[in-house]
Amino acid sequence: MKTLVVVGHPRREDSFTQQFFKEGLAQFDHVTWMTVDEQQSVAEQRQLLMAHDRIILQFPLYWYSAPAELKQWIDTVFGDTFALAPRYVLQEKELGLVVTTATAATDFGAGRVEPFTMDELLRPFEALAHRVQMTYLPPLAVHQFAYMTPDEQQRLLVNYQQYVTAPTFQTLAGRGAWIQEQLAHKLAGLTGDDAIKVQALLTQLTDNRDALDDLQMNLRLMKDAGDDDE
Amino acid sequence: MKTLVVVGHPRREDSFTQQFFKEGLAQFDHVTWMTVDEQQSVAEQRQLLMAHDRIILQFPLYWYSAPAELKQWIDTVFGDTFALAPRYVLQEKELGLVVTTATAATDFGAGRVEPFTMDELLRPFEALAHRVQMTYLPPLAVHQFAYMTPDEQQRLLVNYQQYVTAPTFQTLAGRGAWIQEQLAHKLAGLTGDDAIKVQALLTQLTDNRDALDDLQMNLRLMKDAGDDDE
Image (cartoon, rainbow over all chains, first blue to last red; front, side, top):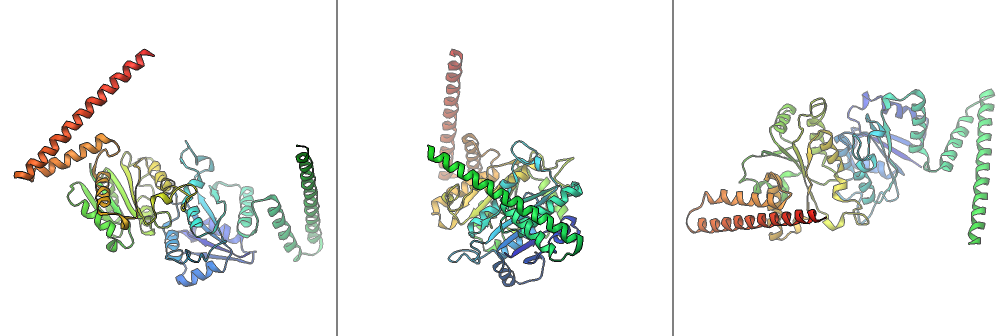
């Protein structure tokens, strides 16, 4: 699976958050990182879209929407009939959003400081995905990055890496498979004690996963037996 | 009441709809028409906002949101701390939206071609109004202007004129008062038969309104009497 990350940040170079994300993706193949101010032709950018399976728009929330620079990119690159009927050229590709905001997660929603949920505010993107027949991924909202502890940042980074690179990140099994793959990749470059430790971790994870699979199988059998009784 | 109409249309000169609206406002004082590509400083544009009571953002729906040019204007002019705490300088001003789209009204909503309502798609603007403590007006959506009959266009024009210039346009009484005011204004410039006709119309409207007021008064009395019986 190939992912294109499109960063629309007016002060990109200054953004510690974007730098953090960019570094977090350095170890991954099959990820292309681009910014909307790059000097590429519309045709080249459309080729980029076509060449990837997952497109991620990554931006700080500016007045409850994308910064103008990113909207310009969307208007231009998605515009005209490129992504539309009669041939939906982006069909079945995935559209993800990584949205950063200085407002706390608990401040969004009915009766709160910000009276709409993030999902509601991002409806225009959901409508866009629907219109061009892309699959809309649940947005990844990053609240108050500057206030996160190092631990919280690390957890965010793993979530982010999965959001960008894991074919399936919405299920426990999908995330587990992704972690095992990362460890196996890491193991290939290790020797000595480090290799033994990572191998042990990998074995443990595989065992856990097998146990989990068994458990789920048993649960399914019990459920089927229960259904027969009805 | 003074109204500022901010037009954010990338191909403004070509837009028959925007021209139609602009001409429809020519007869009104207290309306300022501006486009987002005018060469004014941010300070001047903020002064314009401050000098008006109703701000109307007028734009074609581009990918379910404002065109990038208008978003740029919003990011710049509303940005920084201008419109925000500790002093909400736009507080109690009204924010209206006039949104044109080539998609039919019946195509918006759950299960339809466009799975969200126009109100839902415009939440980011509602959130903006809430954030800067402006009063959000119900958006005026203009669907498929090009397919309207001349009669439909005329009805739209009156709705639009009321949206821009009537202090109260959401009640029958408010719209009635606005029409009487327009007729009185017209009467001042007429003589002879025309003046007599308009005067007759105005008298009729005043009578109707008085009758309506009486009716509402009676209904209220009946309701109060009913409440006493409970």
